[in-house]
Image (cartoon, rainbow, N blue to C red):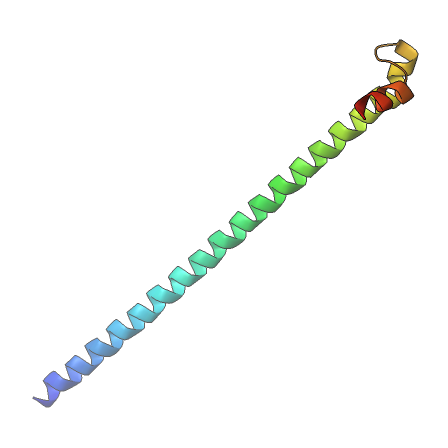
Length: 84
């Protein structure tokens, strides 16, 4: 009878340790996935902001610098006043 109790205690301890290890592994995996998602989102935000900056700079260069010389659009002051 004592042997059966000892075996039952050992099995319970092994199961408890296995559950704790499984939960710890699940938490580590969840944190790792969250970090990867955060990094991917950050990279996407940086790329979108960089593209937006490039587009704004290109539009400013075209409207303010190039178009008055090429005559594609009305002069800058008339273009701006036509927007308001």
